[in-house]
Length: 512
Picture 1: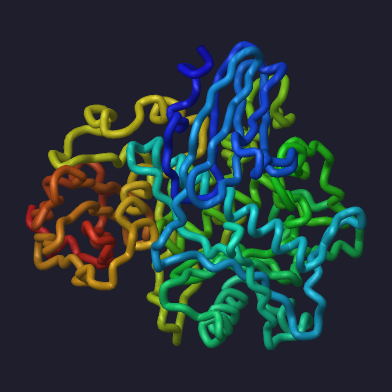
Picture 2: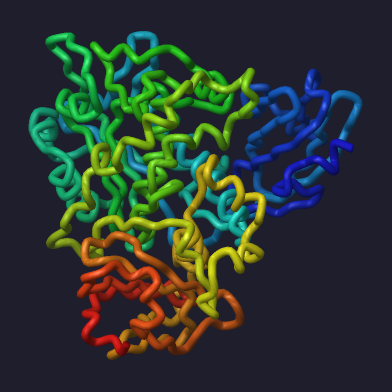
């Protein structure tokens, strides 16, 4: 039966808290597959649904209205009625979308002549992209065995994300003279001093004035050479701002109707005229995948996540297209040996280090760390392989091929204030480290260890019960993973209410 072969994310009666539902299934007969609303007064137009199918596998994205949404899934001779209830998030902590233009510019982004590059189009592409990432995050949290938690986007009365257009005090010439960290610092200050400021929001902002200028017409041989030809480009996330350029925004879908062909657009990027930020794959679809994934990667930094060896916070974000497309060999984009190429590309070649933030009320965030799935430990600090049952085993075995939140990232997000109903009456007392002991009045949930350069080393998680009130920090418990000649550790502790402590600790203060 088709009903028994639907992915675990799909239920006959299901309540979700984001407006774009994801449905996935397997069946032998996909020649005739469609979904329709039961209510005649709310019929869905073709452009309102994203549906892609391979030989036996299909994926669907459904926009929802608040309340009950009744559908019928038709697949060959089979019909399955199902209901999805969308309850809008009431979390007061949210992500605010912003499109930044200069004071002397109309805000058009760089694009081929056949593309709509207006401000309105930019906001449509950004809004849909944010919704896709919101849905992706919820599904990937479920794969780790957690509830389908995700970040909250501001929405209008039609459940569409709001994208603000912000006019900077800079001219285009002034803005394009800034690079990387300087761009981030300037616009962090401008946004924090504007009417858009809200202490409960994190900004996800895009720069309209990114321009690829290849006057010599010489095709770059590597990504560093590409970046040398781009002005107004940045991909940095920290504290309350994730800031990105728009050099490849023209490859993004404006609506669900475009999504399928955008993810299958095998046209080569004209590197004489347009920026190629595709993870060295060189196609329009790959630029979309890398751009969308990088957006989530940088947003992850604002949620206190660091770099991981694998997954979204590593270079796995390049392959976010795999979540939205069916990976039958006959249907997938022509990636050839791209994975081999990407594996040789360091994160630091493409993404600068997190900037040093000064004179802002936002907390300064440390540079990214490196996190591996081998760091999954529970209360007993037993081996990772003994604790696979805490996560979805099918997701574990696919980690080498699929994108995911690395384990410590998922644990941190599960307790993060931006992923839970925020109550201003919740306790705000941070965990503490005193001598060789970590303590928390509200239950330690995650202890993550990083080296002096903020590279991930290891983590322990405590999901059972109310967490731990205190935890001894002995060097003997760290000997199996602590690198030689280590003198300092950065320790990150999260409690049950998402209060996060970040502390540099000398090993001299830890008992053997």
